[in-house]
Amino acid sequence: MDNKNVKKIAVLTSGGDAPGMNAAVRAVVRSSLNNGLEVYGIRDGYYGLVNNDIFQMKRKDVTDILTRGGTILGTARLPEFAEKAVQEKGANNLKALGIDGLVVVGGDGSYRGALGLTDFGIKCIGIPGTIDNDIASTEYTIGFDTAVHTAVDAIDKLRDTCNSHQRCSIIEVMGRYCGDIAFAAGIACGADKIITSETGFDENELINYIKERKHTVHRHLLIVITEHITDTIALAKKVREETGWDSRATVLGHIQRGGSPSPFDRILATRLGEAAVESLLSGENSECLGVQNNEIIRTPFKECFDKKKNVFYKYAIDLNNQVR
Ligand code: ADP
Ligand code: F6P
Image (cartoon, rainbow, N blue to C red; front, side, top):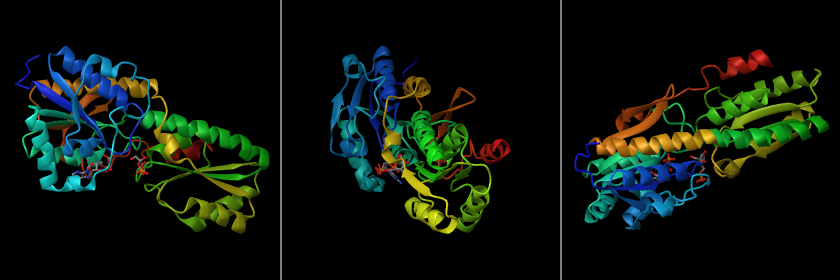
């Protein structure tokens, strides 16, 4: 490969951790070394970049991490990184070590930070690492598939107890403002209702729906709802009071962010990590990677912000209604 003068590159993980971030770091480190580059790890995302917590990585540093959840590099949120002066400090720390390329594994907030760094001459490539699946430039983000597996496992268990007790179970999943975890887990678990920011939420409509269902043969009701829609605990109480159907709320929370990555996430992360190094070697300086129809695609950072993506919304609700 023609390396267009890139000799040293660095990698960091940023934003909420996601299963498969380690697999991406491993792929970046191994591909870099296999192409004769020096590779550096940055601890705790942009926090470590600004505070110069940067270390050279060797093959053994990524041994046995493919299967591990979390991120060995650590991650953090640093709101001040939106300031140009803070970005410049980070860029200067890289330049002082002769590092001219950076791979950022994170979500769209992290991509904004990466784009900011390109203004100071750092070549940046983004890899989508977030359980939320909320990045427009890819069909799937690293960690989403594992999070859906975790949610499905939990909801299947809730179905058992809910059915035994003839209860209504309201399960809150993560996703920030994207409904993909709710849609995917909802379809996979045969949820009676899937409520997300994309579907909208009308509390009275839901209460009426539950009242109607109470007089059918159903012993249980499963409702999957994305976080930030409403107070899920209060909603379950209201359902109990207004419908007489005993209800429980379960907030799955951060458990969805942990665990060993699924084979899908390991493979996706490995492909994208290798492709990120390839991008830097070919002289790219500002783009994020993704997959579409199982092909790797490359999109300028600017084009992936503020776009809505609706991988599941296109069919999820209709499909779920058809099979209820
Ligand atoms: P994600 O990357 O998963 O979307 P966040 O939105 O928390 O997660 O962003 C991660 C980090 O990226 C933030 O803590 C901050 O350091 C950086 N970041 C977020 N938004 C911006 C922005 N507008 N400009 C520069 N950096 C940003
Ligand atoms: O972006 C990943 C995510 O887990 C979102 O689903 C959630 O809204 C947020 O991070 C939670 O952030 P924190 O770890 O700061 O509570």
